[in-house]
Length: 106
Image (cartoon, rainbow, N blue to C red; front, side, top):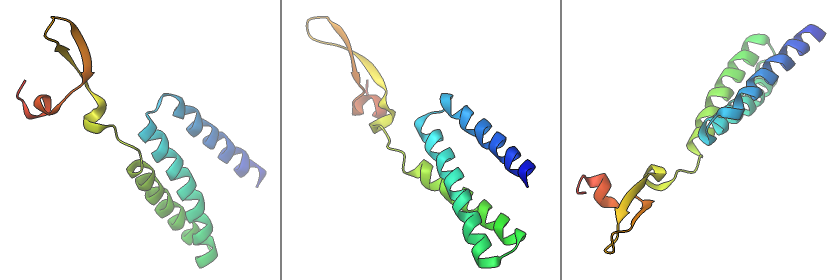
């Protein structure tokens, strides 16, 4: 039993260590998968009372948690891209792209 807990701790540490270079959406999906998997395992064990239902609950919870975590990530409008513009005095500046860029009329 202690070996299983040690292996689980190592796996969770490795999974969380990879979160440093992830985007916000990936971090939210990973966190959702971890929390959903844990919750699903608890629910599966409570309903079925055996290993098979625990594994099915963990898999379903992880999938649902990843989907919800990814779907609830706030999105920047139009991807947050910046375009270069030139004002009437010849100065060049960057600003969020307007609809002309996305419609191909630039």
